[in-house]
Amino acid sequence: MQVARLFGPNDLKLIEMAKPVPGLGEALCKVVRAGVCGTDYAIYTGEFSFVKNGMVKFPMTLGHEWSGIVEQIGTGVTNVKLGDRVVGDTGVSCGSCYECVMGNYGKCKSIHPVGTINAIDGAYAEYILMPARHLFHLPDNVSFDNGAMVEPAATALYSVIQADVRIGDTVLVLGSGPIGIAAAKLAKLCGASKVGIAARKDFKLQKTLALGVDVAINTTKISLADGIKQSFGDWGVDKIIEASGSTELFKESLGLINLGGIISVVAFYEKMVDKFDIDRFVFGDVKIHAVGGSLGMYKPTLRLMAAGMLDMTSLITGRYTLSQARQALDDMQIKGDTRIKSMLDISK
Ligand SMILES: [Zn+2]
Ligand SMILES: [Zn+2]
Image 1 (cartoon, rainbow, N blue to C red):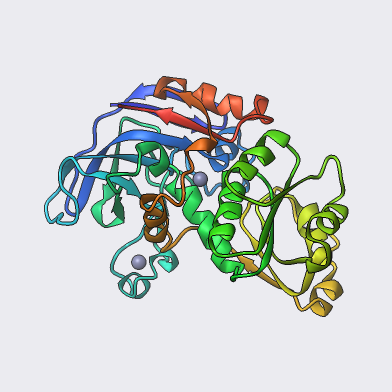
Image 2 (cartoon, rainbow, N blue to C red):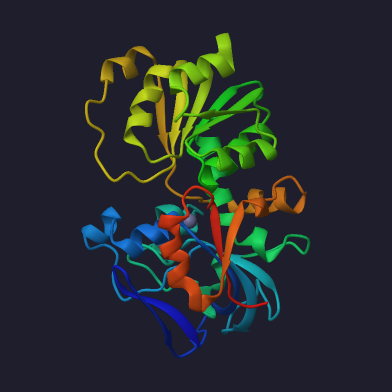
């Protein structure tokens, strides 16, 4: 099978590898779509902190956002069958420790992410091998494109839940990557009275408004503080979802959120947070919640997609074949203004 294999930073080659054979409890899936994620790009360039500290092991195969078709199953697999349309989890747990048995497999100490850190091979390939227990059925009316975006959508859903968004709340999302945009849409679905998104690119802000989000703040044209004043007035913002990866915006949000507010943080940061104003944090009675993945969020996300309430496909701004995977990654840098989600179309 063909694999876009990453041998080290900036060293991606299309190579031929043996098609894996599913063992006990495993399923081999033909990859139909694989999304190109910001994390993939950070691993590819070597900028990711986990590349620098050696936790990303090369050679490896990227790709943790995918949809596909079950092609072959190993013994003991009962939850999927040949021809099933599926999506896969971003982590593979041991399945037998206390946390796994209790269903908290995200807390499994032996978990192996898919296609990222210390990982099993991901979906930048014609086939991916997964334990069948980590597969989810893709509902018939959900396209492979939308299915390949379950992971960012599920992560966004977790960020909204960690921010404890409630009916009537005012919510501001910082950052307009796929997760930020999806979080804004999902906050609206949770019944927030007003949802805003703050970012730097008009193209992405317009895409977010088209999904039914109320207000957009372009922080290259107005300060975040003034933008909040203008858009939210006396209501202010009760909940902030930090999806920009900017330590500056994170610090600023501490001073802008309503008293008793919650900030959920769903990004990776290239630098440490300097001059953190802890007094503001304490007197503001602010809570900061981390969003460490998408555990347990696939099922509700797939249901929202099946119900026609969450269509992420308008965020696909570029399509590539598997042999163009390197191009797809290189374009992440140069097409930043108009790129939201690039998709590898691996098979039909
Ligand atoms: Zn991702
Ligand atoms: Zn475990």
